[in-house]
Image (tube, rainbow, N blue to C red; front, side, top):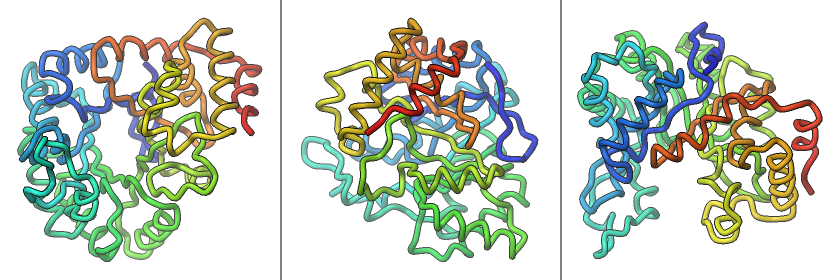
Length: 336
């Protein structure tokens, strides 16, 4: 696995990041360890989690399961120095029995309205909790998980700068954020001498969001343009294969994530992916990950989140797939 520079920090990270969201819940501990070991065997180093993962997995859950599992895994064999470790704060909802229905179904509408947010005290407590669960004195990358527009940016950025000064965090990131907010963050950091977030974690794939979509989480053309002009921030693309819809016609017609993409443009690009993948002798999912790895303006670092060891194995061949100029052109020009 090759590496790329994170922003313009000089820090090299693996070109494919591993998401640990489901580890310790949907993915058992034994399978999680198999996935982690195999990813590192393949040359990976960049592991991503969050303090809220996965509070919704069981009634009464408060998150932290993924961080605790990663802490156990790193302690076993003294692996911490091999890991570029990222975690996040601000998206754990305030605890309430109403967060779950009687059958244990999470109430996402309430959760989104009661996220902890990015106040200084909240983030301090969140980071200290993450460090405790991870069993480390610092994380390499700390994200604001969900942009908090109810807290002054100055308060959040000053708190984050403090984490860096204290040595608890090496680099900063921001997630689920609109472009105008990134520009405002940049201006405040420049004026106050605060460290600029060097990673922007957003939902991004080969499919493009449908016309008129209102989303702070999915990259649009304006955000791509911003990132091209500001290569000191690296796009970390979560849900790069949209939970596997490229390989599954059934998912394309029924999966809730397709609501953000469905339409003539998506149909045309799905056709192109299917055809080019067949020509290349790979799966459409593998082709999409490879396409993302080939992007240079802006550079894209895909974040995969396999639920099973088999899903990881199915994606790893994308690392060795070299697309021709003709294939890249076909994929780039496809669309309505």
